[in-house]
Image (tube, rainbow over all chains, first blue to last red):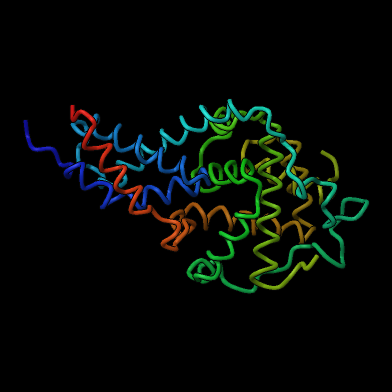
Length: 196
Length: 87
């Protein structure tokens, strides 16, 4: 048998622990759960390392394993949280004043402004990401988890429904609210528009 | 096809980012976007946010040291790897 392209597993916590932990924390928002997921990932990788062909980097191989562990984790823990309310305080449609009675954008506030920068420049700026993290942090936990799985990780809605134990209709509501919140929050903090 | 309110457009467009809509709804959206500059901005900004996130996923992670792995947690992970049977 040829030598495995995998480095010594005992070096993994130093080489990849921090990255994987931040990755898991962004998706679960729970430090203890994130650490548990990193540990499960390392132990699964230990068992599977004979199959690592070295075609990707070691880190992306570990991230691939971790994505499954995160999905398993959601499926396991969401069952326990079934009694959680789907209601997100402050984010319900009733709290939304961007539209008038007729469903049109209100002229005095809330309507989208043209963002002054070129998108390529915007994403290069640290400030954009600081604001993005802050705005994302304002979302209720399950809404944030749904948004991250869909908009960052490109997970299908069917899979997200099964991971987060929500119906497709609930998920569409969560995603719509989170997109609307994020767009407006970015606009307000980056460009000082849409004050409401 | 029917004429949509801006509020409905924001809901329906968001849904269209997650699944393929029936042709009538797609036409209604298209008709609305062709004359409403605000909803068109809304749509472009949602597309921009998705693209920015999918192309730069790592920039969302907390950067500060306190958002990283603590020395104690790192030690616990090393211990778990040492104790676990290698094969």
